[in-house]
Image 1 (cartoon, helix red, strand yellow):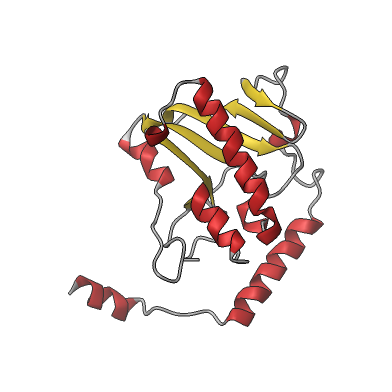
Image 2 (spheres, rainbow, N blue to C red):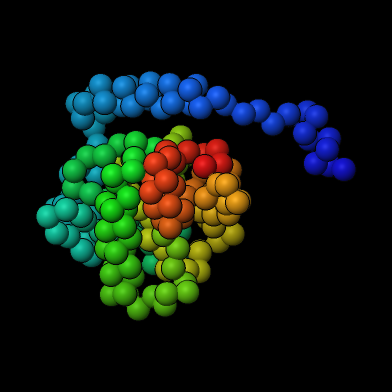
Length: 188
C-alpha cells in the first residue's frame, strides 16, 4: 500500500538513452576542462611527509589509512594518476578497478582482516569528499551504525548490477564497467 502511494507521488521515470549519454558527455567535458590548479587535489600529493600513513605504494597505486576511519580497519587506495571519480570510468577501466581491489585486499591481508569481514567500494558523486578516485577498503565491523550508513550496498536486479545508492561495491563497479555502462547513483 505504501509503495502504491509513493509511486503516485513520485512516478518512476525513465531517461531516454540519448539523454543519459548527453548528460554523461556534458559531465565529462566539464571535468576534463578543470585543471588541478582550479581545485587543488590533496590525493595528488600523498606522502608520509604530508602526514599520510601509507601501507602500500608502487608506481601505479598508493594505499593509506583513512584519517577518520569508519571501520576497525579503513584504508583508501588511489591511483597515482589523477582520475576524477568513479563516474568518469568506462569499460577500459575495469582492469584498473580490479587492480585497485587487489591492492586493497593486500593491505587488509597485512592487518589480518578475514575475507568475510571486508567491504570494498566507491562513493558516487555528489556523495564523495575528494575529487580523486579512491577505493574504500574496510575491515569490519564499523565503528557505529551511523558510520555504516555511508557505505550501504544496494543489490541489483535481473537487468541492473546495483540499485539506487551512493556507494557501489567494487564487484558491482567492475561488472557495470565490463558491460560498457557508467556508474551512477541511479540503478545501473
